[in-house]
Image (cartoon, rainbow over all chains, first blue to last red; front, side, top):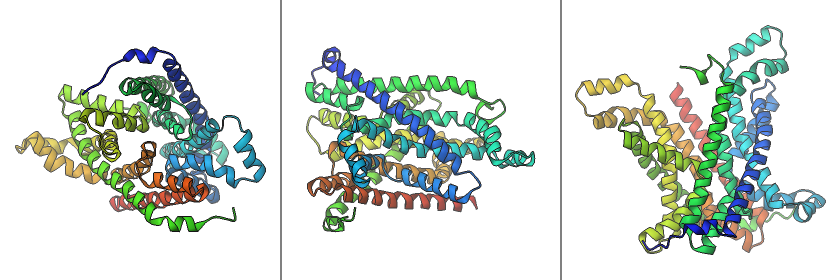
Length: 239
Length: 218
């Protein structure tokens, strides 16, 4: 294997600057999308468990739709197709005046896609709390809203912290798809460095190490949260 | 939106079908390879031999921390370098997907193996079977039967993930759709059609998984 090693390339300008800017974009896409994913995902996940049939149907349809189309296709739909389908004025605005179109599109697409996965975790969490507690709450005279607010959500949110950790990691990894619409996040920057310098090994290794550090950091943070939020006697802390 | 052009889809169906075949081929091969490699990793992880289980655990952790696109780039770059000559992007992609999926399958398979009760392993050992024989004749057959629904679900995810070969321009269904979209200037039609095709296949797959689970629960 012929290969000229040159690790110093990673610390030269402009390449170091590219990497740093890539990390910034990765974080800003992932974190902003996470906010959308949590908000929409919790709403949809709760919606799948409520007594009302139409709401359940809509929320189930949302999950099935967003889960069964590849994220890449969704990204292209938001980027290329949606501006053509909305009313003319809005479309013109999206195409011409919207600030940072790649960023906004990536955040919306990734957020709504991840929402469908978050919704499944939320639903599973609520179902795991069990019918018994729900019935007990109703028997005590709590309304549906009160049952969710005081019984189901507080317990289920604390139980789903571990699976949410892996969703949180996944959103960082999935943010790399934004490169397909031209957003220069971490993976895109490492590829660009590889193409400019022919030092593919170093460039991809740098990105890999950074992603692994993000994963480690997120795992440690969420572990802390897990320990803090664990309910004694419920499955997560059990055994 | 009144001028949705079905013609462009119909005219290009043979080309799209070729792409879809590529996506399916990649899915099936990477799934088979991933399950084989994943089984080996899971057995290493559970073997109780420290170097093997540390290797397997590290491998799984590393692969699962990194985006699939980066792994595709890695192998696109590494495979020709290691072989000393260029090979088609298909093989690079296939290797990347197989090794990537192996990490995910190994976690599924590990859980499946652990779902087989310990008493069965002990009974097997007590009747004089070796470790490998116990795995082969007692644990793995039962574990795989328990795992079929999850393995299929992972296959559906893999099928969706194959669309990412778009980043190295391998001619799968996604790449072909976008080629037509751009050359014919019909982005709306092609991307909606692509979404529809993926949706129908994946949704049908998930209904199939539900039936499998239903059949198992009764």
